[in-house]
Amino acid sequence: MKNFFTFMCLVFCLNNLSFSQGKFIIQNKKQSDKISFKLINNLIVVPVEINGVSLSFLLDTGVTKPLIFNFLNVSDTLRLYNTEKIFIRGLGEGDTVEALKSKDNVFKIGDAIKLNQDLYAINDSNLSFAPRLGIPIHGIIGYDLFKDFVVEINYSKSFIRIVNPEKYKYKTCKKCEKLNLEFYRNKPYINARIKVDNNKIPIKLLIDSGGSDALWLFEDNSLGIKSRDKYFHDFLGHGLSGSVYGKRSKIESFYLKSFELKNVNVAYPDSSYTLHARKVKSRNGSLSGDILKRFNLIIDYKKSTITFKKNSNFKNKFSYNKSGIELAHDGVRLVKEIDNKINSSMTNSAEPSNSTKIVIDTQYKISLKPAYTIVELRNNSPAQKAGLKIGDIILSVNEKQAFNYSLQQLMHFFYAEAGKTIKLKVDRNGVFLTFKFQLEDVFN
Image 1 (spheres, rainbow, N blue to C red):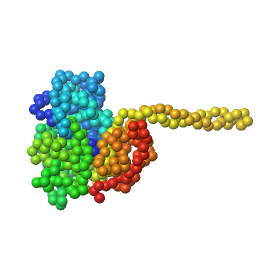
Image 2 (image 1 turned 90 degrees about the horizontal axis):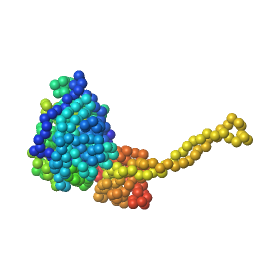
Image 3 (image 1 turned 90 degrees about the vertical axis):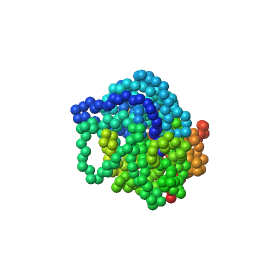
Image 4 (image 1 turned 180 degrees about the vertical axis):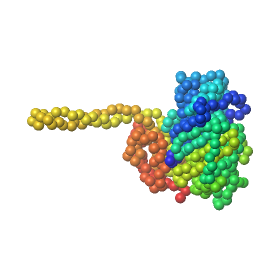
């Protein structure tokens, strides 16, 4: 499954806050549970129940406490207890964000339950993940789940398994690689290597399952970590404190012990957006979903280890958006559709009495369909040079109605091979326009 568009989940700082000391407990005899997830743009979406309300959360190793977005949209049914106002900061150049810290919430994930969970609720509608992912996303959860269990993440079959660490039994796996985890402020880091200009460079990376890219690196000329000659500037994602921009390029190879991935996508975020992330000693970047999904993982915080086993995604080529367009779900549109009704009726008396005729009664119906809008447009990209603009509403792609596709399926068109012709019909302020362009590979 290709990475349909690059979307970075937030990594936020909640330093010097006091957290409750409860833990998740699995309420069954096996002390383990298997939970199915959806993989959307390399991001893991799991069902979470909070105070009796069913929600959808991203599973993100890069966050310390659960966070709820667009709290006002779910506040009618979701009761939060013991709240206080705080301010938190994440990636991006913007200011801190106001949030409500709430204690003593009941969380349920599969058969696992926790009775006194802290969470943070944000009311800012601009921080919703749903438009960029095309499905409802209510929040994120990370450390609180991983610290209490051994967590298996099976990307190839789309499930996680949580197990009481005291009951977990490792199986012999000669084709696996086990690496040590290092922790800084409850976030996991791993040591790896990259090859740049034929030099192998050791790096330390945050394991960030909440990022859809393959790899983020912080440029450092003294270490030889720098972009190649061929790169382009692009939107990289949206954090708590605003949008993040930087360079996109390729590296020759990425290594996890004996595992080697070649011609890997890499993003170099501009330093102004990552000042706080760079304060972590010796950190060189992040390892995210487009690499993680190529393995099935065993994450064991108590033993400070992570085990990698190659899966069916391992040999897939690293692709990227060759159009320059980023889309978002932008409400709904009224669409006029043909509704053909087939009626059977008796013929007139001049025809055989046992005959019938089929009458197709063409009618129209008005339906509400999803609208997809261009929200980012890369400079000098094929789409921009063709004349497309931010705010254009996509009506069709290659003569196919856009509303018949999910957001991910639409973005998939832009990840095709270089030279592929894309024809877009758009609505620009009530005027219908058509544009054509060919996908371009910047790196060849």
